[in-house]
Length: 617
Image (cartoon, rainbow, N blue to C red; front, side):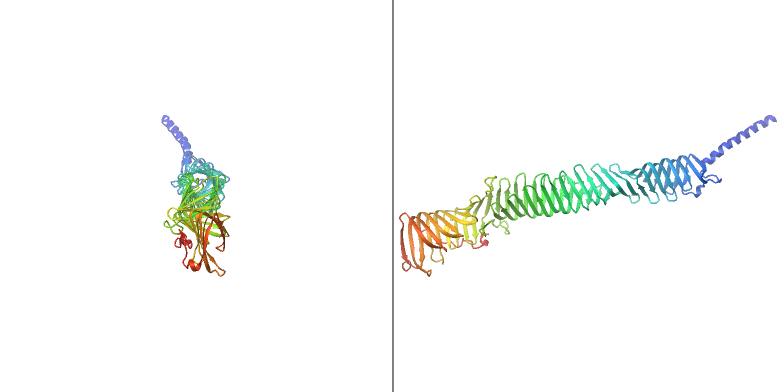
């Protein structure tokens, strides 16, 4: 009997000892604490899901819990992970590998965290990382409101998407709206640019940056400054609308608004756009300036103005290709190149070839020689100073080009089928003008026609040549003709006319009786744009009518000699000097008759004489 009782007592003792050991462990592992004053799970907002060890204790007369090992807590859609958690009702201090997970995309990692379940506000410390999709925010101290999904930091943070980074001293991250507000020492870095500012917002989904403070964007070879605007990082598109400016390889630009398209590498400046390159001496102004870095083409639109050390260009639109060194004007424009000025409806010029073409109501001015050429189209070469004009101003390709020059406060006009101008010497301002086929000249007191003409600014001489028809010049009531004629301008006044070979001068006050002078050569001298003297050399002949005081015809003088000089006043012969055995006679009007007497070769041309500028077209 005693042998039977001894094992039973021993077995009961072992059971009691085991029960004493297991019961506390059971309380520690239980998810619902005992009712001896410990916190009850059903009254907490933050629920315990797992923990390897749960300890209940009191501190400052408050019931507390400490969870250790693979701790997982839940509040609605919020999951909390950590190594240890100390909980006081709805407040928890989390330590070690802290993770706050909300939904499928938002996670926050930290070394430690203070979490208030009542407000859903967490304060995270050290090695904090907020992950939202592809965006990651790194900081040392972060407050994250999980209820409103707003993260706040004030000790500096870095946000990155793997490609771009944004840093600032302060920040407010609205996770739902995917909007981040950066404040203080903001720095954005990207493989293509660096951005510095004080205040900006960033949309993590659209990759849109907006800034409302002075901002500097730096690229490999350029800088952009603005005080307001946005930058689309994903599409590399930016728009700056408050005091935007940029610098690029010695070039500076500004406007009311500026856009940058990174894919096409295009800059657009709008509103009082201005670009200058101090080293090259280039300045550009327009309503809109557009520059493409890939093609190296610049377009100026609206009140466009470009100038450099060589030229000054104005127009509605200017396109410049710096790679191929050519520019084009669309719409009415004007180019001043040294002493040359050209205006046209459209214009193209290549700097490499030095050649250009202007079309549509072209006006070309040589300020050094002080004359103008008007045409429908003009081809020119800057290097050779060559100019070729055809077609008429306002009359199209079927019209005639015209040259005009101011002479003694009166304009001399000249037209031809074609006008050509060039400089024989590139080091000189001397210019030659060639006009050919049906040349016509009109001045109020001087007109002329010929088959071809050459003018040189070196001596201010117009040289008239005969191809089919004899050159003619009219001055008031006088007509001059010869195989070749030269007309000299001196101080912008008519000085003299040289007539060479088969010269003939006819003069008439009434168009009925004609004074006539012919010879091999003739030199006519002018003063105050009127004929004052005439010198005839070789086989000289003169036929002139004498008048009485009442200007009635009294007879006609006929004289031949080797040389004669005639002196005029008011377009009338005042006196004549004959040289080398002159032979002459006077024939009274009764014997001479009322019909005009004529020397051999006399003719009086009226149809070819231009009466106005319209006759030159």
